[in-house]
Image (tube, rainbow, N blue to C red; front, side, top):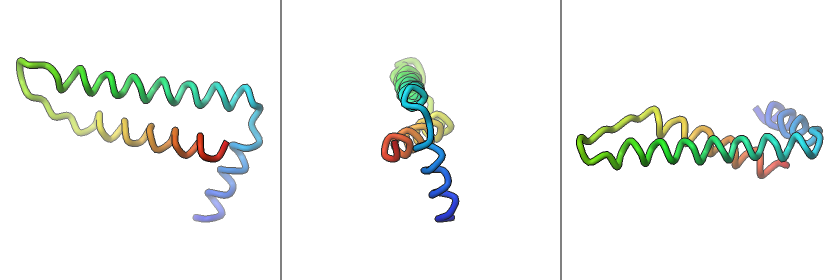
Length: 72
């Protein structure tokens, strides 16, 4: 598993700087859109709704964004 992470980190470091900025920007945009969707779903006063998949996707994309930002 350590070899896999080292290969991924090396792959990310080999990207062009413009591509790094573009990927980080897209991941941040996806994080913001996921957060907005969660707020829209759970602030609705008509009925209580709990959708676990929204939280899973938000956690997944947030972890991916942190990983990429930490190794750029």
